[in-house]
Image 1 (tube, one colour):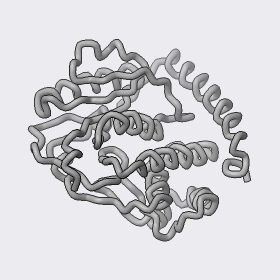
Image 2 (cartoon, one colour):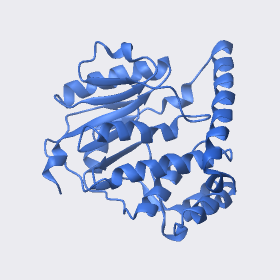
Image 3 (cartoon, rainbow, N blue to C red):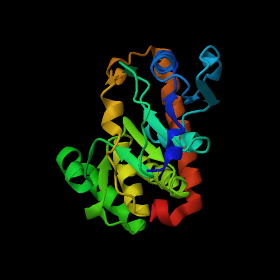
Image 4 (cartoon, helix red, strand yellow):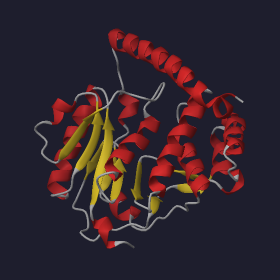
Amino acid sequence: MNSEQHNYCFCTLALRKKYRLLTQQLASDLAKYSPGKSFVVLTDKPADFNNSPNVLAFKHNQRGILHCYHDKSLVMELALSRFNAAIYIDADTTILSSLPDTLTWKPGITAGHCENLVEHVTRYTPERLAHIQKVASHLNIKLQDSPYIGESLFIIARDEGREVEYLKYWAKIGRYLELRGIHAGSGNAMGLAAAKIGWSVAQDGWAEVRNITKHLDASYTNKQNSWDLWKRKLGYHYRLNKARLVALKDFEFFYR
């Protein structure tokens, strides 16, 4: 393990008011239990974090067509441009106790939930398998050896620039799947990207973080008024049409 990976940060997405409020609380938890560590946040309202001194807040408008799950690749890219390793933690998470002072991770990706991608998709969302097979074929990925990676809590550590390549592939694969109506399950794209660049999924150090967190899963309590729903519908169609146009620049990959 690289001792420089002690220079790590936390990061998350905070889009919409509910998640900004949750992230403010999470920032407070991190300041208490992991003092001195930075919290990189992509958010639509950076000013909401002016009173959170451990937060590095950056303006971000949702890129994902329906959801922002694949936008996680963007906040990780930003975090890893500044730190040697980054822990992605969902905004709807609470910290329960202090983190160990000696956390380090192997170069590449570390996650707790990892299983064979084909088996995972066949078990839970078999209707997606044909599209996943197609994108794997486009990128010459050995699908049978590809993992599914749990996306709510994971760590990426610098790996001589391969982390940048990994995040670009994740974003590209995620966009391919979105354009085919697959808006959830970012762990599929994460696993395909890992297979593409030859990463195996490490687990050392993941449990130490997981054991002091509690994931609330606020997505199940997401109530919106008619104005919010209209804005989201409008935003969806705008992002969809924009993504279709941008994808034309790589026609062979996205449309063949």
